Image (tube, rainbow, N blue to C red; front, side):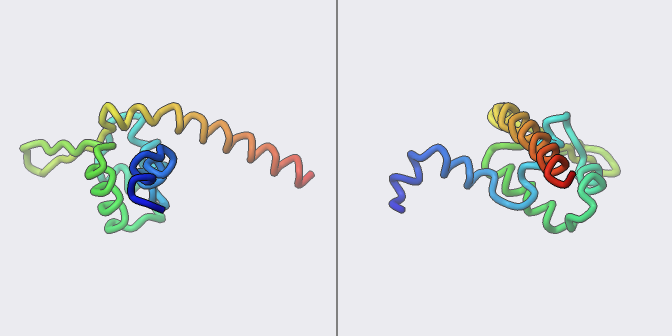
Amino acid sequence: MKLEQEITCPCLIAQRLIQGKWAIIIMYYLSLGPTRFNELQRKLPKMTHATLSNQLKQLEAEGLIHRKEYAQIPPKVEYSLTDIGKEFQPVLDSIGAWGAKYIAYQKEKDM
């Protein structure tokens, strides 16, 4: 695909921004409010420290999340959605609704 097409194709841009196995679930947890690194890691126990760190850095670089450092001891860092990251909320809601329908579908299928 040509670079010009990638830049103007909204679906490709969205896919690039939320790439990664954990991006959507991180965005979901941050949509609930500002969250500290260790709190995110407790909510995502199968994710390694390095993977979470890398995914947060990527989302921050894309402008979807904000990292706020507090000048205190011990150090405190919180992550939250940026304004453009908050615009992703309807997508999260749609994914959640579809996921619930799929779970119901699977339960009916197994009966």
